[in-house]
Image 1: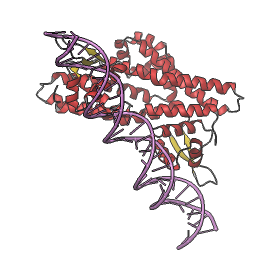
Image 2: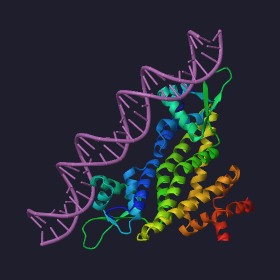
Image 3: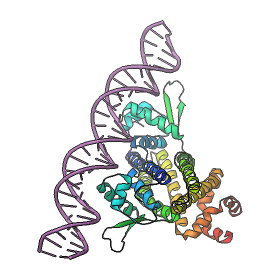
Image 4: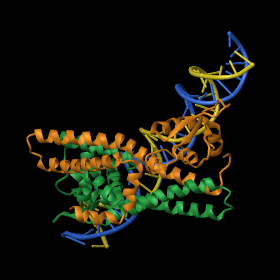
Length: 177
Length: 177
DNA sequence: CTCCTATTTCTGTCTATACTGAAATTACTG
DNA sequence: CAGTAATTTCAGTATAGACAGAAATAGGAG
């Protein structure tokens, strides 16, 4: 994996750009893409060379990827260095990432909205409009969070089946509503 | 809307922070929060004063919000200034945002993955592993995009009903699988 | 046409974050 | 318990993006 093929490079670079749009830094996303493609775990030095970034940068980025729970350290017999490998199952991968984003971003927002709605209800009710808007927002977040938890609880293959149903959803809904 | 209440300020500031985590800049998100809460359309000067940011910054941010399709210009009789109002229906709001994010981020990735898979199939097939990984990723994106399109096509109230079904999803799945 | 108000564009500054290279730490090996 | 390899931490630097203020533009109203 010293040098990348044309296709590999294309994917790694694109993934890096995508990362920035989702609030992940470019190098972190590139390393993830590289590990995702790699048939075997890589050690930090290999990553450094392949992506031409500083060794320290790789170290920091790997820590972050481990924090997300999508990269883990493995060891190779007779080699003292840490090797890193990405979770390979794409469905599992996105499930982990979504869980983490929910925890970091949605849950705090839910908590804040609850506080805001509570506070604005206790107040002299002079500001009915604000309360109403916030309540609508809160309802949306609660509904979506609840729904996600449902999907989340399904075993992966059930979730895949569910999503792949596609066209039948609306029909089922017609029956159930 | 010159000065914000405690609750309003709390929400606006939080929404600003959230924005940064989703790749939207803080001011843009704050302005959106402000317009979302405001019972009446606001003109740029009001926003400038309420949020204490430069007039030019407000102008740019409003353009970006219009680009997302969640804020539009309206006019008030006898007032030459542009007034701005946010889309108020939360479900509609997120639908628009998701559509836009899909268009900007998912669709290009889909296209790229198709290219990569095609290219790596034409090649001497020396790199079966890369092709396999990319194909798995592509399958995931295609499935999710197709699924989203299904939901997307539903009228809003059907989509809401669907999501609110919650607990019954798994039961239905059991019947349908 | 000229004045006036509203809005946008532009340019330079500032700030937050990414990144590097070096130093420090950790943890193995003989 | 050296000596060495691997990793992490740290401190300074570079860069991208956000932002302010000024200048330019647009678009009435008289």
